[in-house]
Image (cartoon, rainbow, N blue to C red):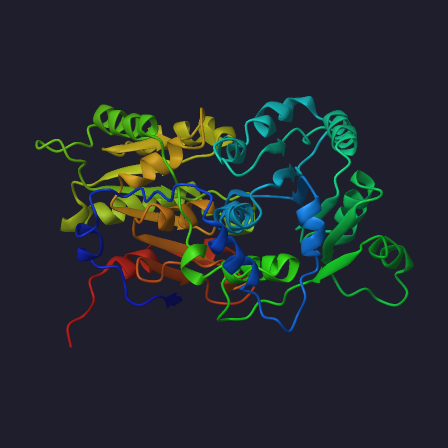
Length: 417
């Protein structure tokens, strides 16, 4: 089992955290001199794919992406930097739901996708196409987008790139269209014809061991618009409204996670769910981890919050009721996305599989143990100081190959020389 990070997480790693875990980066438009600096920061050797003169003439731009929460955790800094560099441009965002289905029983779950709550609070995004989860709504959204007559459309989709290149051109028949492009075999004529619809393209990226996904996303915006996003600006941030922090504190009080002095007690947040089964951890493993941690003096009195996706709540409740674990509560952000980061911000430790939660942990500055496959090292948490990554033994293994004792080893305090 591999562990990555500057150190194993020791108890002092979270005891000395700031009392205000939710770091806020307010949105504002900088001075004109700053705008010029952002626009000129790209290497002069390569002209941007989108002509700055076109952006100056345009009044809006459409980005197309099949966004997950983890994607937006890092892409948000790119959109924000673009909005600062081109404040006159309205940013519209097409969020394509790849789980689109004609089964009406699944629509309510897809309609309440947590990402939409986050996007609704972003002051630099003017419009979001967030109803693409059914064939009928997709067609209606497509017609609505066509009516906008976008002068510039950029597809950031990295799955089925040719289909999104076609979608971009379909939305904007006469605009400047940029998309992601992957190498096409000589005999694949259909894809070659689709890619010809693009006015410019971003080549598919090849992950590098030392390259983080935030570097890749920032590189796209350099290629597209000739703007450099500094490394420090790529760190994920969250502006959590006071009402959601109040909600989290009330929830902690209801669960009995408050000390006599009014401060939150030691609480561990465990997330075993991902959209894909190969990145998920069995709930039975979570129960075993809690029982094992409770055998250690440092965690005997700790509280545990177990994150559960809404569609799995009924099964989880039955399973945990049978386990009869004390000071353990199930949680699901059923009403609003910001319930999740607010709860995370009050915890002392987060243990999560490779999904948005481990990135949000960095955003709220809470130490995290991330359980990951070896397939996508570029998606490791960005904050190496407060993150310990446990990877599967072999490339291609699923996350369930990581055991309880592997997590316990990461929890152990560093050995003295």
